[in-house]
Image (tube, rainbow, N blue to C red; front, top):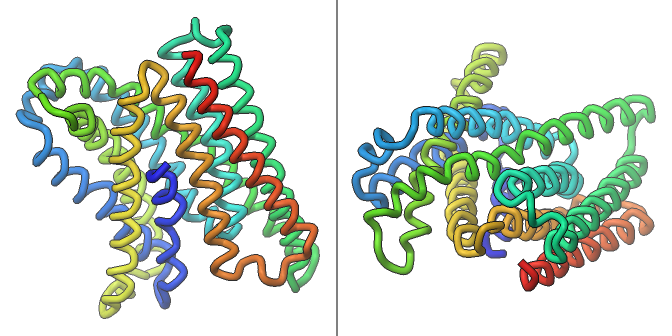
Length: 329
């Protein structure tokens, strides 16, 4: 739940970044969140890190890296989705899709037999309820968009582009959780020589390093393309405040992922399903609350606000259902 609060909050500093292009902000974010912090954390917390990678099957490293790269595509379009749709609608659409996909696939991979149990059926219900909550939040965003000033045809086209980008991001963003599942042999190998309360937390840092390097590759390729296309690399200079804010985004997000890995590893065999549902629901709720706090909904009609609040309450119900399901698993 703490990871969800961080995940729903990490993009807020972006609101205060000025005179930078998209690629300036998100490149610094990616450098901190996906490269510097994962490398430092993994080498400090995991003994014999390089040796662990040499003992794990190469196919495990490759699939973890590949799913990390695909997550990077989802994360890149996440930034674009927030820019096009705003914090509230962007978080709702992207995280909602990622919630269902990212929780169902690990369940099918790790424990398909649990689907027809009482706990498994309640989890499936929680996924469905979460999807309903996302639809309500998305509909609220649509009502809000209709109330904005400007040409209606242009506004509709812009809204369709925003929804498309958010949908792409939601599907690929679930690859972060799937990558964690694919990298479980790395964590198991890392934990062999570890002892102590935080051993599982530290072991997953070995997985995150591979996953997030793959994700950084996606960011790097796209940002290089934009730097060349927009001639925007020069804008990075002379804006220390923007550096700090983009770096803070990276720090908050990495703390979220580190805490999620620790929590999921402590929730049993279906930890990546249970933990992911909780993470995503809390993320949507907090992201939307920030949307209200930062004034995105000030001029929205009351109907849109009520629809959004209803969606958030439905998402809270999905979290409660996950908690109930855990008692049966």
